[in-house]
Image (cartoon, rainbow, N blue to C red; front, side, top):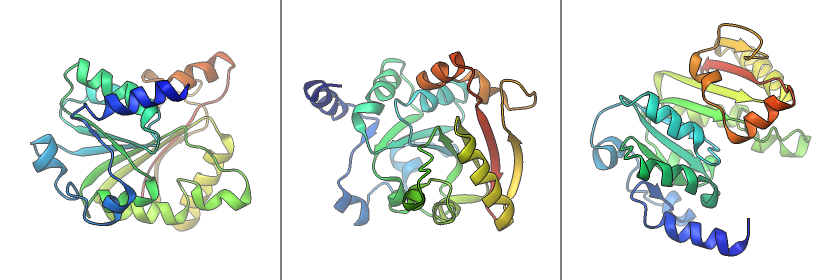
Length: 223
């Protein structure tokens, strides 16, 4: 994507009422929506679901269409990516969708204790190199961040094309005593996965499937 196109998308994001792009200082300071997403933005008490590393926002938007009784927030550091999802939500008058441009390690600055009901992590960078493990979105440190903002019965979903990420996460969950509700190493060849896992496909997922790449899925609770 050219720099002009990126700038155009950044400017358009600023006109969308469903996009929030706080500075890092604003995030680590006193982010005004922390603990107030239901009352101040969504104006209802419906459960809040996050998509972490939401990319183009396809999953966030499609989930919002399927579940109008829930609120959805896509999070990514690259606003030019989720511009597409934000624009679609505006065009389709989806009032249960928001997008937040921030780093996922700052998630506790954006949400209060027990504010979130469910988290989706879709096709994250597996960060295979050892030096990058601190950025892996299902490492122990990130799981504890999620636990602090999730309700007691909150659920986390991991959908990935990385068999490494699938195996690493499953091993960590079992090793730390978390509750694995469902695990599948190829959702398109094995039955039993929730319908939203196979019926909602991202742009890149469709490309993976054309090359017969396995798509894995884990649903779990953090103990």
